[in-house]
Image 1: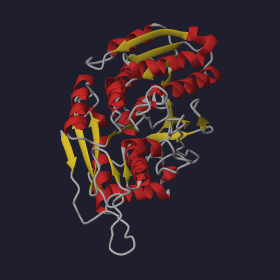
Image 2 (image 1 turned 135 degrees about the vertical axis):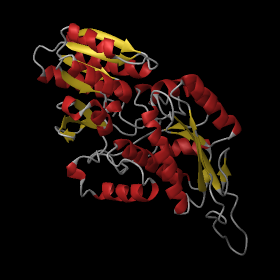
Image 3 (image 1 turned 180 degrees about the horizontal axis):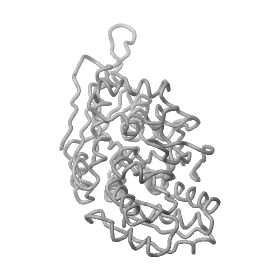
Image 4 (image 1 turned 90 degrees about the vertical axis):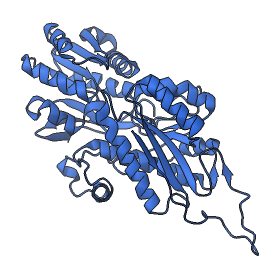
Length: 405
C-alpha cells in the first residue's frame, strides 16, 4: 500500500516583505524534501503481514496531515506524506526506506514502525544524515544521540517499562515464579533485559523463558510450556496477534497466573479479541489517555480528538488507542516542523526536535510532558500502571518517571 498525500500549491509561503518591493528569500534554507510549497515526510508501516493491526497508525497519520493541509499547511507549506507498506519485514523496510530517501528524497522519516524494522535502517539513516524521527518503537537504543545523532524515539522505552513491572510484581506477588513469553528479536530482548535488571538479585524467580518468531502461526505450545513450569506470573512480551492467542490459550488450559502485559499490545481492541472474560486484572503501563476510560468522557483534548476523528477518520474505531497515539505523535512532528520556520534543513530539524521544553502533547496522561535536549532523545519519559476491569483499563498509583530522565 502506498499513501501519498500530495500538497496543493496555493501561493507563496510566509515570505516577509522588506522595504520597497524586495522579497526576503535569502533567509530560506532547504534540504531535499523541502521547498517554498512542500515538505516531504517518509513513513513505513505494516499494512500487511503479522503486525497489520498497526496499519491504522499510518492511515491515521495520513489523515492528520490532510487536516494540517486543510488548515493551510505548516508555515504555508503543504505536507506530502509518503507511507509505504513494509509488512513488518526488515528487508522490505530497507527497500522502502531507500526508495523514500534516494528516489522520493524526503526531508526525513517520521514514525517508522517496529523495533526490528527500525533496527534494519538505523545505521543507514545516520550514515545518510537523514532524520529518523519519533520512531514507533520503545526500544531503549533510540535515545543514543552520541552514536546515532539522527535517530529519536517517542514513547517510553521498553527497558524502563519492564523494570517498573518487575518492581511491582516483587512487591505484590507472594512467592513469584515468573514465566516469560518473548518475541525473539530486539524488541523482545529489550523488555526481557529490563525485567531481569528490575528483578536484580531475585532474577532466579524466572522459572521459564520461551520465545516465538513473528512468522510463527501460533504461540499455543509456548503457553503450555509456561503453565507446566509452575509459573504463577505470566510476563507477556508479544504483539497483538500473539497476545490475544496467548491469553485465550492460558484460560483454555486452566492457567490463571498474575499477568503483566507489555504496553505494545494493551489496546482495548486486543483485549476484546482475547475475550473480556479472559483479561480481567491484567496489568500494563500507560502513557496515553485510553478513549474507553470513562474518566476522559468530558476531557477537552479527547473531545477535540473525537471531533477530528469524526471528520477525518469517520470509519475509525474510536475505542482504539492507536488512533490517539497517531494523533499525538503527529502533533509533536507538526510542532517540530513549525519551529523550523524557513530553515528546513535536516540539521535544523534535528536541532528543533532536540529542543522541546515541557511541551503539552494532546492525548498524553495528565502530568506527562514532552522534553528533549541534545543529550536526551527520549521525548516521553513517564508512565502510570493500569489494570483491566470490565471492558476498559483502570489507572492506579502515581506517575512513574523513566530512567532516561
